[in-house]
Length: 307
Length: 307
Image (cartoon, rainbow over all chains, first blue to last red):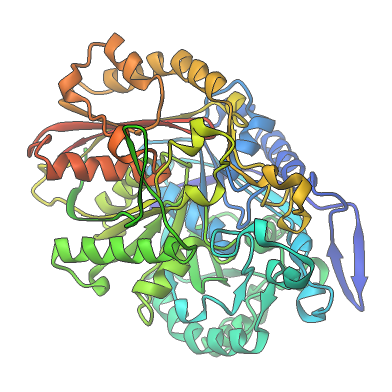
């Protein structure tokens, strides 16, 4: 086990709340909010941890989409929260499951004393890329930011028990924004091709494929440790995941489902749900908690932590 | 020391070679080349290591700019080289110094047996974002891709001795592409604001700032280990770096300068120069080699490896 404990958590939800039937979604009203939400979540996490930014040894940004093509997102977040400090900052991206990947990777660095206190921030504004003509995706997403501060647990009570990631690029184009990078440059944008720059999801194909691959993936994660899983935090939009989990005998009350109230927040979804579960006493000290999700890529990603 | 050895190296340079005075630069001629070059570099590295893609445990993409906003770059590379395999893939980004950050991070995972063989691929096409009206930057960059395969050195002869990163966001906007992310969306592109979507560098400010911060940074890296540095591979465009290195008593012949022949290849620069030094016998087995660079962010990044 890589010893590690959560010592601070913060989040920001946009004030603008909208309803689609029973579902509640949060949406920003201007583009500045991407970095502003990251800043707010970090301030809240530092307050929660009773720390100052200079106590942090490394800042990891796990946003799936950046504020600018260059420099990297974490530098622009650094500019808002750590100007004048020399805290190293790094972007880690596995789209919706970036938080799991970051936690996995930094747990090794923390265990080996390369860094002690690490801040992981996810800020996402999917609403800026949604296509109004596609209600399935348009009504699914929320904008949000989260920040977690972790450090070495010298008492060895908490930590990362196991982690597993697999990438299935057969589904690389099931969920994508085709235009805006180098393969279809921003400078090619015009009225006729504007949908190329919007979020596109082949929902049915994606769900079918996920169901096909999730079952053996979950069995492999669970069987990689002798510890039993007490509670599951799924990515709130990994459709098919709940169905598959039922098949592998996970009880309904040990599985967090808040997608109706909060939507899919991309990389902020998993840490947001983890914070929600902790704040609402769904998880108690010593519980083994599995964070799990499928992500554009397609990545399947899971980590089991002892809380 | 995190035990790790290089077991395969590959590169791709575009066929299109252009001259600016004495300087040689390589430039792609179509946008497909971003992923194609990544693919080519990986094929070459696998051949060099006498491995197949299924022997790789993790693929890390270290490109500073992606082929699409979503999914992440490594998924799109995976689609070309590992379709049907489930090798996990991750993007790590600290702009020009991403290779150093990736090597630093994965060295901990390799040391702890989380992954054994890791492939780190950098593919960059800066020419697509250059502004012809700014000869200082227009004439500096080359397009290129590199791939390195590393694995645990069970004999303990090679590895990562020390690494250091610091981020100075005072300079976050000295080198940037302002438009194309969420803060200035691709969908806002028009003829009047097209320069917002181009690479911009305040060269003088950037060089001055780098010189100011590099000296103490280098001293800190060097003094973090008792091992002496035998050879230095700088990022080929970290202006001011050579000057500062001379001040801290590095001999000219232990410092690789190939910027005239190859230009700045963004994140591919450092691994390209490392491969060049190995291929040209500038480095011998057992040498302590420092990779060092400054990058848009501004990040200073250094790693000392025993080759």
